[in-house]
Image 1 (cartoon, one colour):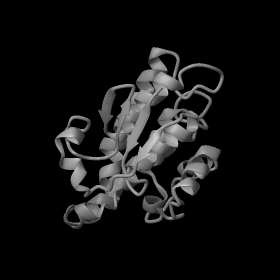
Image 2 (cartoon, helix red, strand yellow):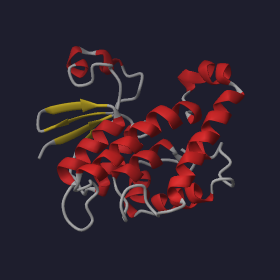
Image 3 (cartoon, rainbow, N blue to C red):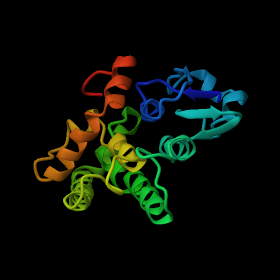
Length: 207
């Protein structure tokens, strides 16, 4: 196996680094920042057509977009055994994709803190808070009946949604109204791979 992960740990690349650590994968890390000129090179655009990180090359296969990369890695390397991170049946697989797509489409736009999107946050104003609260309510109702999003154990579904709810974002959210979400996030962040990844790349507690 030859896996290369492109992107700074201070970006959404941290999501992929966490996944690779969960899976115990060996990889080469190329810490390109979001504004690195190399992202616009022909070589990198062949890997990530949008010229954005994170992206990977795995045995010659190139893929970008953090949540898609995590789904791919989990299915290829973490789909077997008692502690598999990828579901073993079509229904749970569909639920895994549903939660990942939901997090990106219905939650992340309203809680993101990206500096480049400051104007968009300002334009959304209180509407962003309303939509974020609505999304967190949906997640809380789902987690009030089970400890994890899909099945009875931690999977890539949990990792992907928990990545969207990063420490730097939840620091600005009131989770007291969604105790199931609060407890689930805490459980995700207690995972050794989460702790090890942040320590390895010296990510600050609030990032």
